[in-house]
Length: 472
Image (cartoon, rainbow, N blue to C red):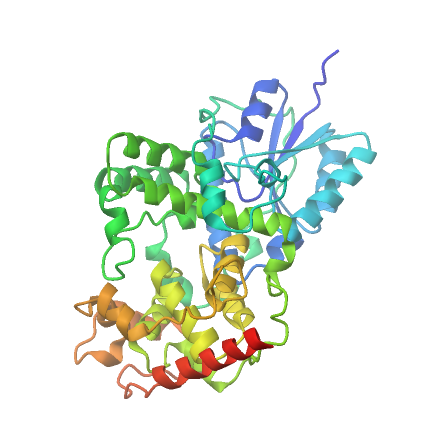
């Protein structure tokens, strides 16, 4: 006789109905499906902005499930304990979820799967967060890839399969278990007054993500390669926010890029490469999990980076005296996001000109980015610092002024975000002072500061340190 016990479908960073393998399998099983979200030990570790944004995503997903006649059961506490309690309450015979690949989530999921399987339950993980499983992409010698370009060549022609349509319905259990009230969790508490400033910049939920992708594919993907580095233009997809919480699948992006490429749109291949860059980040995190907390390359443990100092606070506040760096840091505080080119510039200035450890910047992004991703953030910081997967890292020291001239030639980006640069600053720049902590005592009428580190001085100091390391 087939199993008719309910399936607990444990949602984490997969808050969508379409192209969702675990959800599709549960719906096809014909068994009662109980969707579950747990504010567990991994969620509790999130910084202020990503935890708040996750809560908003959960709220939107509750509405999506309601349209199927279903609901999302909310519980708080240790993941295994919360799931076991729900199993006892509902008589569920299975717990299914979408796989994650960073060390914290692997550790949690391994513990959960082992305990549930020992108890005789069907504990099963499904793909869906990535296009390619990290263990399915290997070199000719059967090893994992350590350089992006060969990784791209290995996967670019692979069949990613057909996207799955959303289920028409989910069979409900005879009795629904109790659910916490999402508001009682106060997932946005740490955001303070910044939440009201950042909120208008967010695009929450599956519907918003799909609309965003369609608009990008129609209007901007053709010029993506030529203009994606322009900080003064809206030239990117902006979908990192939605990918982070699984509000859209990577296969949806891949399919849109492939269609655009078939139509001859010039920027399509570059867009596909950026989708695969995310895949590469997870490939490295899975095979070399130390990348999330220590230098990826051996021999960087003794590099003379410093920890947090008074000048680090100025970097966080957007008061380094380097206009493009300060604009980017303030964009982050007002919108919860930062242009990708700007991320490279603020990272380079912190780790090279200021000689501050990349972990300092990584932790700040963990706190402030609404699109924070454990793999992309770790690899991005190590790439720009030189300790990560980069064949020739030591000489890449971006000149912020030169970069600003190239990618913000009419100063629109800098003016948009740094109030002290204008006699009549725009509201975007003034919003920073409404969002930042009162303890910073920031004043839009203050004199713009001198550089904390002059560009020529910082470059020479960094080159000397890198050259010394090579010699040693």
